[in-house]
Length: 304
Length: 304
Image 1 (cartoon, helix red, strand yellow):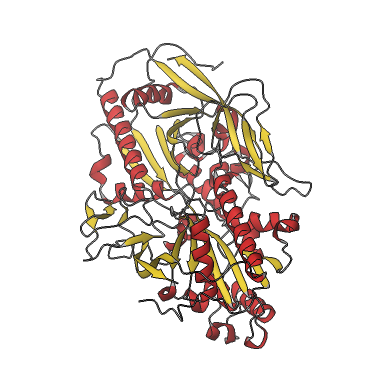
Image 2 (cartoon, chains in turn green, red; image 1 turned 180 degrees about the vertical axis):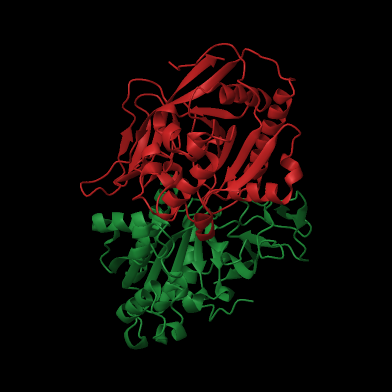
């Protein structure tokens, strides 16, 4: 069960310092170019009660059109790694820089950090919540009301609460949009992500002005259970692919016995779990090297 | 008009030496893993009259899961570049190696080289012909009869006849499959590409055994006209994206005045040509750096 602090739907204080971040992964272009658009047209993100900054998190990787140069920036913000002076790769140095800037002496200065990602999986518009933090839970409840196609992925067990860039803020929200190939834009998804960010800022503005009252709402979450690797041969080489019946079926129920992988030799590997699960990050390009073919989630409805 | 040598549908001699090549671009995984499959199960590509070899063209890029390490291998086979001893990057050295192996003293040893590619554009299964070479024209006519969804892209004006890897063989055939994100497999497209390669080998076997007679056939080609760059601002930065109405619409007619780009500021840039054209490589990830948003083709029907 989720550990939700209280059932009072009250946000702690106002949300004034907001950061909109793109390019944490340099080849996820929708976030990169949306941040550049906001930098070019700052009126779009100005609100009376907000101090909203924009940031391109990994300029080296953006310039190289790669996810990262030395290692995944979005895994560099664990306390131990930030304190480890022997980690001097490009992203480790960049993480220390950003942590010093936005979390000086362990005190976060950003109330809400919105980190814009994209994925080759068919995850549509997804909010990623790393914890049961009431700020983002309430925000997700609001956004899924206004935009019913938005899905909520609850990643608390995945490690991102500890090591993601958004972990350096008081509250962090990831947004995934897909499917889109790395190194490309997709205009329809770009527009959808822009609309979602504008909705967030409008919500915060109304909240800060006391116009959003406490409310009780059901929120459907897809809670991370485990990551599944590709089938591999004895040398560690991939020996199969996501089965066509599972490809692009993120958030659709996967029942025990249904096909999961199509092996190169033509045989089918089914899902052998006992419970119905809901896959996400199905065939995400960046996860091949992380030994993740898909992530399994369970669907939960919570009242917040 | 196409310069087709003769209208006699007769292939010059038998086609015995065949090379199936994957990984010319290291992050186009379908070709890479299809070649690995053929290496693991060589019976799939053995035919009595054929000497069929397999090749992973760019092992360095495959290991790095990148298109290339120093520069695009599929642009390294021009005669001048091959003769230029100052070009010593990874791909230039690899190109010289492959040319020495397969085209010693300017004499090609491979009768037909089939180069397996994939694209983020929605090009389905596409045969790429770089010239009006009768071997590949006849083959394309046969394959489009057997597999009616296969499209034929005639690239003769694009430069690939001179600098592509397949240019080192007597006859070269490119196969594109998409849309698929770089660094990912897609099982349905993998299977389709495998079926197509098997069809090619079956055709060659029958042809070599005299079982395929000369035939006259109409062949629909999409002939390369020009490449169109993204709209850019004064600093050279992209200022728009493929319009949603054009995204994934490869091989569909684009009429004068129809939307081509959606600018980040929300305005629409239409196609301003006078003639109806047929776009291909729409939003191909690897072409952003080549300043190509899409390629325009004209549709032609030829009798071969």
